Length: 381
Image (cartoon, rainbow, N blue to C red):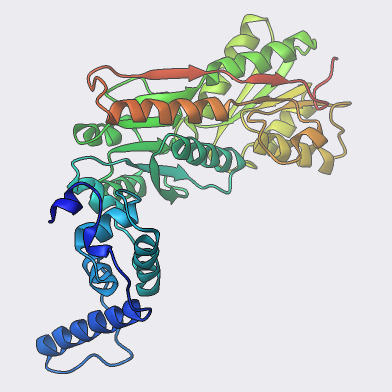
């Protein structure tokens, strides 16, 4: 490296260049790669064989500069004559060069890439969480590598996905799905910081930025009690199907029972329509309200009530939880709007602090409560 390069000025780039220098350099690189391939295989590469991956050395050779100069120019560092930097950038584009950000970070002894495991983003609540996590990571200069997992109640697919993310040498893991247990997550904490986004965790070294689901259940139940209902159905997925729904439902039941309300508790699987027929039977037996632990379940109940000729809220009041469904305001759903934005911001902020040298032994758990949405699907009796 020359003294000029060490100071950040490329003396070797002074003076005019032929306008076809980039093209000639590219030809030289391609010719050399073809000769190397021929020497290794005994025949030259034909047109159907994919070109070898373009490296920074290829770009430097094609542009007629040193590897160090090309590296600094592509990173936007150092001082260059405008025509020099333009030539290097143009060469990289022509050759199809893509910088290996992760390799560069590892070589520098650091990484700003975080793995994110997300539940099916077709669910609006998870889709919005994904968007906000991406926005917050970008704002803080972090990169997210994301895998999406569908139904996986035993968590095996999720464990494999986390192993794949670790194989990418991520600096930390954010888990935004509830279908994996603390025992399954705990081993990953030996290697990188791991944080749940959305769901509470109470054991191990797993950090959280989570929704206060018991508070959401209490909000909704207190509203139903205030409306005068004395016989209520509580419909939710089991703890295995959805732990957040389970926590909401337990809080609903506890609040209702404390207020002297008769409660019919229905715990089902993950599908929104499960348990709806049983809820309708309880309504025919005298229940005046059906409380659901998600807005998807609330819609399933409303459809079923309409099918048997019952009106909401004139005949039966119905509540849900999430407040993220498109059109929820137009439908007038009575629900709780979960604080997705706050959870996403806290998750990324916490993870950044951990990977930048935070106290690994101090487990961070941050809880956020949403707000009651008093819609039109629940009315006084």
